[in-house]
Image (cartoon, rainbow, N blue to C red):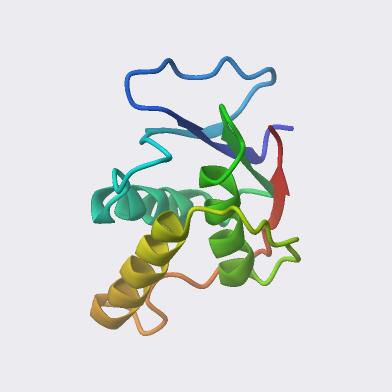
Length: 130
């Protein structure tokens, strides 16, 4: 669908995934699963990307080349941010999740807009594909 967005995660040194479909909104990110490779820079990229697309995006997908803990961490964070239902995966990457939460909290406190620039005008539903 033309109003769908996808965040695609792949390992450092790996290749971006070839994803079927015409994604108008796509963000590719490279960070490893088994390290503290994910940092505030990555969190800021995700939040900035979401702010640009959230008014136009109907469905948001999170893809990961392994689909074990990075995508569930991002999915859990997204579900909390947008109030979507999410089945918690016990193997989600806690570091990725905590970094996103920490940066979002900082962003809300330091943003120039009263709502932190983070309130969506449409509800995004987290759908996750492997």
